[in-house]
Picture 1: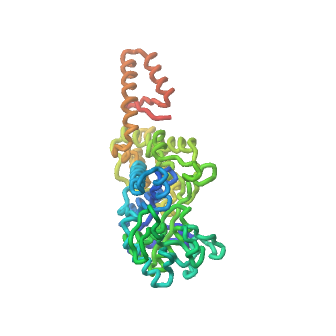
Picture 2: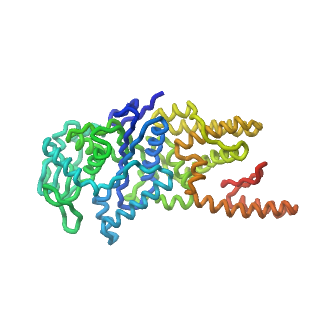
Picture 3: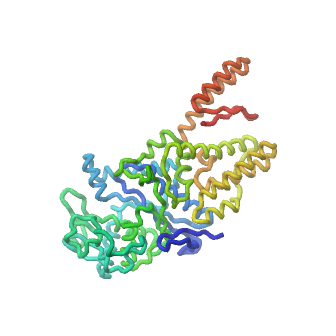
Length: 459
């Protein structure tokens, strides 16, 4: 079957038909660098990394743009509260986001533009909007006239007359309509600013993404993505800006659902966020990636440590099989993707159904190895590796990257203990050998004696 994606704009599954044959272009709303990322932020990165990997695996030449919002009301407020320059505060948190994306196996985007590097493009976009009658200057601010754009509200399914005021600037009295949103904000004392034909100021949040998306992907591109919370007002406003200026803009709108705690969206303002750096002190990066990517991207995920433990155990089942097959049958690289896996991924990135195919292969491969059928076991392992590569969780790739350093350290320590156990068994001190095994078990490590030697796993 051909790839189908759920388009928020039409509220339907649509066949993916790229603007340019053989190419796929993606713009993802990335980090607003007001603070370090929690795992709710990075879920979007993982979901769209899987999309990019699947498009590449399907033969498309992918251009993937993920922006950085490095000037924003929240950044200015947070930096002032912490007594740091806004640019230093943003740079520190941008590095934290980059580290987190890399730690969880997200491939680098083709381009990762910063908002402050694209002020000329924003000025030009505002000039086009003013010329087309969709924007106006007032007191040094520039606003988008929402009543000039009949399509306003279509993406989110809202009626203009039922909307609340935009509430995005201090100059509400300068607006023609309280629902008009700010494209440009006039300079305030102590804040950064850039010169424009309408005076010194800084960009509004929504303007940034329209300017950067078209700068790197053109006036028409394939997929615009982001979290579900961005549908309104951010993505609604992007459409108004870009289409109002004369661009066709995005052909498909994809939105991932939230990571929640107690039924609420994970957010810093609610005080319920869990930093990526903190989570990775307890779980391996590949296990956290598995957890964030295993559910369908449009499904809300309720966070709990028990759920993350369960995800880690599920991933380790895959890992153990690949290790076992490699030990028994040699290299496990280079297989075609099973049809069931491809069909699942083509059905709006159906990762849960795709993982079911992975686990069928794991089950069948283990059964083959149990029966001494090395050829069947090896083929199953090759398919598992091929499928998990698409999902970014291939055990062989993670082992080869060296990013799982904690695992390597623990492995070295456990193997020293195993050597002591083997020495005890060699001198027939079975009581000491059993005691070592029991101590490992008490620490959460299961030891398995195999023909290839002892193998350990975390419970």
